[in-house]
Image (cartoon, rainbow, N blue to C red; front, side, top):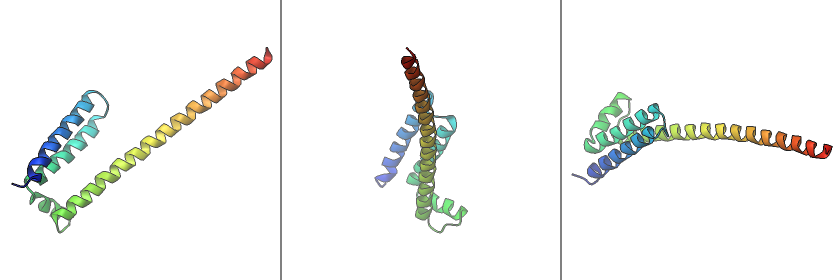
Length: 116
């Protein structure tokens, strides 16, 4: 048995446990937990049964299993990047609101001091 067929399932199980822990601590949603668990289960499946990736590849019209895995990794990475961009946009909007509120409050405070 090759090293990756032992190492990848162990890493995958640890990753699943970490995502479950984060879900229980309410740091991520249930859908995120489910998606990541499915991803890591595929890693376990493909590392124990490498020929399974060829069968999944044929389902999507791809000739080789390795090509399927590489494409799947790109899809997951794009999903993560898209989520991060959305999170950054929301944080930027929140920062803009806070800055506007602070600026308005400071201007009001300065007007009050000038009146005295």
